[in-house]
Image 1 (tube, rainbow over the protein chains, first blue to last red):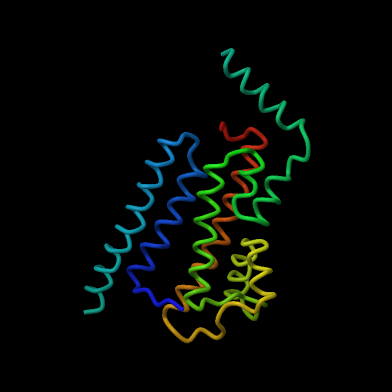
Image 2 (cartoon, each protein chain N blue to C red; image 1 turned 120 degrees about the vertical axis):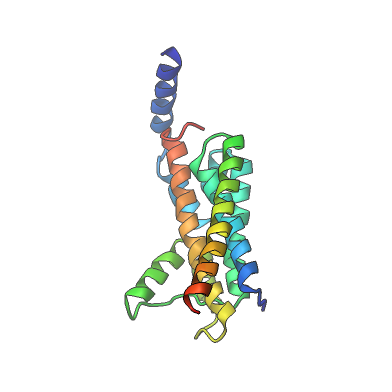
Length: 59
Length: 137
């Protein structure tokens, strides 16, 4: 039984999902790597942005 | 121009050989198997590791494996879980997964398992596209 924090769970999900997206959505290794990195940054960045937005809305 | 014609000819040649849907079915049943059949060892390994890791982490977080559908959300969860192919059926046979959801992390785990199923479907379709020549390489 593991109990990761919400942010750790987000990082894990974003990492593995970005890996699959990178491989399946592009056809050259370098482009796969770039697209995977792009997806990872978007996943994590948008989660952080939306978290802060919800933090201020809740106040 | 000639290169484009060659690629089209290669794609047509590929579709003539064997059962076209084999990588799709194999990729759905076993993560990465569709790519392994096409000798894409690196891609297949990365896909298999990513999908199996998400599934195992989901179970380790006490995530739920859907067994039936009482409402529309359960139905969507079940559809996501079924994307895992044999992993799902083995998990069900061994009665893995938590039920009901008692911790926040168990809810994350349930989502991880659904994620892995949906990603496995994407990977299987990618293998099919490689097989038919719709995707270049």
